[in-house]
Length: 86
Image (cartoon, rainbow, N blue to C red; front, top):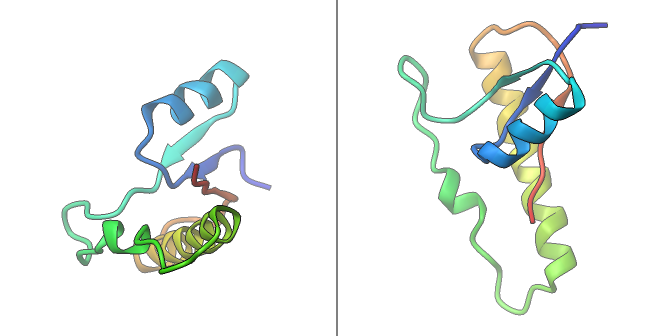
């Protein structure tokens, strides 16, 4: 088991909370130099008539899928990936 997790979030607050809890983490963000471009904003587009709970579940799943692909594409070691949406 790795001694860190990936945080797939640009939220400084989420990173700060993990630090306060003593959780070692590395950011796994889209659109870094040398990687393929991702349209991170498109993932968050709401669907017509979509309930808030359904939106959060769908978007969080899409963010996780993108983060897993990003980790693999970059050849990074396996570790848990934390994704969320509010």
